Length: 334
Ligand code: PRF
Ligand code: ZN
Image (tube, rainbow, N blue to C red):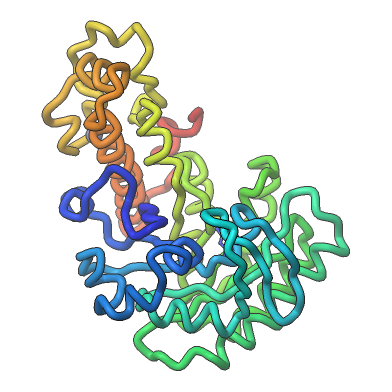
């Protein structure tokens, strides 16, 4: 899922997202609640209409952004008191309020309000956050009445395997179509994340989508799919694009580097995106170095297409009964 935090995938227009075959995008409840406000979006006819995107949208609950962006005043069982990172205004979000906001936004998939602990949190903190996430899950489900929106619960438990198992087992009864796996990719070594995923894998039901939240480097997508993950989201692709870095079938390309000054070849000869069809590395390097907006746009289109194609290739490999390790060769060193 390309990330459109504020109802816009940075540097990429909706028609360009369609062109690279993005099937779904993600938006953030926290940001849209603060600006322009969920009531405004509701009165515009909902998020799809407001941003002119007719394909699916998933909204994250804010149960992560509020910890990473806002100035937290107090977390209680009732909810989270925080100050806006924009203007310092004070707010109080409960699981019920979070569902109301996401109902107003009107995404197809909405996420429960959760508490995500940082890497390094001790066992006691992790148990407390996991249990609070479970209590909030029940409140979210009781409050959610809109049958047109699927509510995904979120598994927490930090890096503690027994907590992960408890959280998963308690969470699954609420998973109608799928569930999120949160609290990973929060600073722990990749090896640790893979071990947790390996451990949870035998306990997933076959018919529920598994969404690994906030993960999106090419190697993690492959390693995640190996471990049964179906959905991902990450700002990485578009963020590094605006900095002048591209994912390619030969590894990462930092187009700013002087080696590309007179390199008139395509960014990636295996890519079918608008950027690769029409421009050279030399020109892209020039755009990025000159601070031209189009440099960030062209690289964002390419990076998103790269990840979407990678997922498509993995889906096809699975359907055809092939192994995935052959796909990995090109990406794993990233
Ligand atoms: N919870 C929510 N959103 C998230 C996360 C989480 O734990 C993460 C962790 N990688 C990313 N986005 N609600
Ligand atoms: Zn491309």
